[in-house]
Length: 559
Image (cartoon, rainbow, N blue to C red):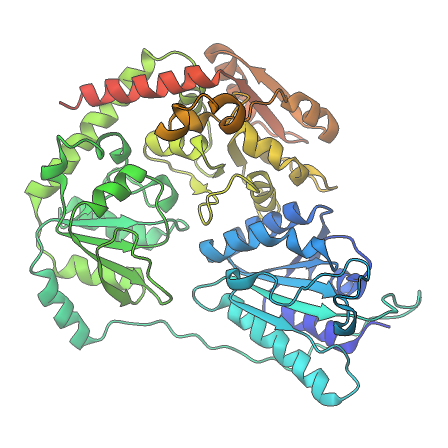
């Protein structure tokens, strides 16, 4: 017999827009699984590996901008959700994490698949809730209903994020073969009405007065989804020289008016005096460029962070104001009230133009390696594609190569290598547009269970940089100078994606030079029944040399 509160939980999910569920097989979670599977308005998929399942749900929720439900059985299964939950927390992606549990009297009694699951995700969820362990009294049913409403509302309130509902269950878990499920379409729903914070007239006057003190203003958007309205107002601000807009690729706000090649020249002390701002305005989440972070930390500029609410990290160690309103509202006010400063803008724009012109010239003389391979591949990716990029070198290469027209998605909440494949797979479940993943070998093979399921992904394309090592460690001063570099930091491996492609039925291409890469890329985005993988074989030490050479040559052209 399936308990009424579980059916109500699933009904409330549906009513609140949670229309997708990722389930992992298990016995203790059977009542929850069956309720999701049998609900007529919820699309349920099963993913066996809980770590992959959670990142797949994250990839879906990130695109849908709605919560996705996650369901697993008791014990260590719940712990395998943790990396994706932390990522979702810092990326502000809503997930409804539902874990089955033993009844409380059986915790710490050496019963099978039993661990301490209450508050298991600690401070990396917005809220942790526990269902009652019995429903004999009507108040217990009311309590479970209230928990379901509170949790789902909380996941969607700004800033969005994951919530955890732990449900202790006693046997029997399974309904009778002929038992019908009755979902109550009128189950009690607690509606959260959310209003957006706005800047009052009085506050505008105060801000206007404060802004009048600054001449050299830098606007730095952090990671976020593409936004046409934000893009338009930022382009106006930049084109009118009212501020310099510096955009990392994960801001998804790059344009011809913004500064996109900053990672090449921002670290040079030669230009620092002309580029130093006296005010930094930020919104969104993290940025990629370490050079930009260090430059802003050393600038001694005031820093204002604009956000609907939540906490404001002091990323640049100069935070002076937090402004709680929609970024579009603040930027519109800013554009209407700021004078232009052509001199400051020209310092940035000159370096941007020189770098943009130098990059293709330098690449025409560059040896083939993963840097040049990525530059070549990016030319073929359709503008309407979703571009997922793994951490370590992959996202740094893409950021160095300037403006991107595609939506760029990267797990920069925790910046780990785990889950890149799975996040891209989750994205394929939400769109018919091409989904491209650019990844290194360690991230790719670490997350191979992303493909262990029975769902088609004909729109998935993977560009795999396989240098058989963790190449980024050759570019970090500490490990690069250690005799233990190759064994204990690079962690060399001999794997090839060819075998994985046989296992999962992917189309496979092996690349060792520029010509073969360009030949394959010509047809890479033609429609197919199965995903396609390009595996680009290079040497780790050679890639490090090429990157250093390219940076040197581009900087020589700036002086």
